[in-house]
Length: 86
Image 1 (cartoon, rainbow, N blue to C red):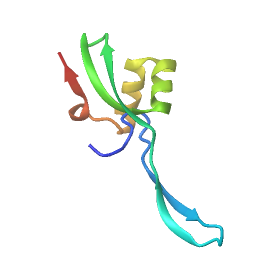
Image 2: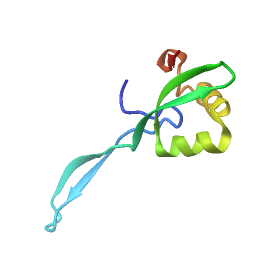
Image 3: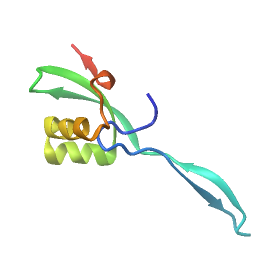
Image 4: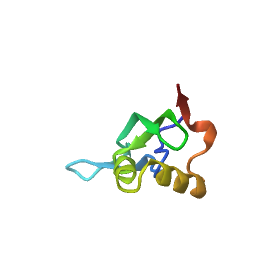
């Protein structure tokens, strides 16, 4: 799996390093990702997600089931990408 948040869909952006002489070289702005284990109450199982800090706040605000449902509906998350732990 690539470096993409499974809840928000955030991924790395490209930009420039700008030196003192204003010479520009390309660089990559990575996302703040975590591999985090959650207990999914509705399915009665543990799952492992790769989420960003913003995705973690989204789960805290909406709840795990609502955040995952929104990600499924937007096409960000597929059921094959969710690692179910028992």
